[in-house]
Length: 489
Ligand code: GLU
Image (tube, rainbow, N blue to C red; front, side):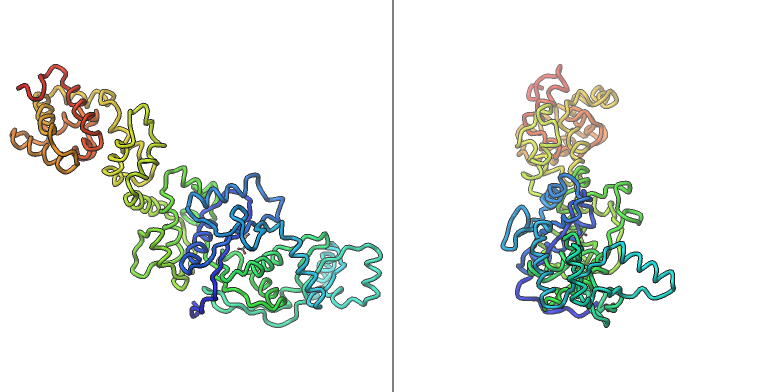
């Protein structure tokens, strides 16, 4: 790793996805790092849509990107939806600017018109290969006599615009890989604008990064080979290149490329599966760097505070869903009960179960720790509220055990005037059991079945708290319809 460099006056990062499909975890990680780094340094995070490959664009591509960023809570400061001082933020809409920049390079002599058609260039390349000659640089139009150029123009030949690339090293520094160099001869005279007027990919990216005053380009390592071409363009325009950080690849669980076939590759699949978005942000951040004290469960604020590009790891990393699930549980636990209750409300049949906001809030207070995914509410919380009669015959049997009626009566009595909090409720129940000289295995099962219809589950103080006083006492009463009232014997 190279020595850290001084920060520019204003940190500006960008995330530049193509609207070609669902945002996968690798792209999301790139967005998150750019966002964190900008936040850390009080800078700007720009979303630029690289939509020039119209053939690969998918319907709703842009919406899908926004949907994923919104879910992750990664808000661009500038972008197609947000607007901003460097609009437009869709690359296709910037094509005139790219062409104007190419015209300026023609004007200054840094670029030239090339009249060769792509098929001619290709045929000459193949001929050179067949003759065993170096393909080198096909410079036929580089210093075309003016007379010939005029003739081509008169014939109506379309010209591409190409950058004059001299032999010699093109050097650049990547934060992770150090200084890299490639010879200009290996790059050739880059095409900037194709003969049909469409700017090329690297030209558009470099012009946009220059015009949007991007200070740090943080992107996937797959773009490393584009970087020297872009650096040449910075040079041609006399602009200092940004800091480049090419981050390693996120691999599918078990290795290999992320894809739909290999588990959930799309960020929004993790939403469907009930992951807490902060856990996904936390997890993807730590795929790239580690905090100094090794702490792994980090809130958004903590991530912003601690992100340090100098601690980036260089190795490709496989997605570890077990760890992401663990982190999801940690973030659920840290979530304010009111917020978690609102999410749970959308995942439960609140009407069928007869749940109100206060019920859900109490449930969130005590049961969040039993869940790791938001979707766990179905297995961990819902059974508590279902009518106990639906709990199954084996469980109901425990209600006919000899001590069942006594246990339920004692529970009703113990809870009749106990403060409705989990700890006092649990303590009152234990006290009643002790006073009656009953064993836990005799005392607890009928009480539990009376409350939930289940033989197993969370601490009964928590169960009663979550059910609420009214529902709890009513369920106990209903489990012993023939018994006298709790104060009557
Ligand atoms: N559009 C490119 C991609 O989706 C990113 C280009 C860049 O970051 O320079 O991978």
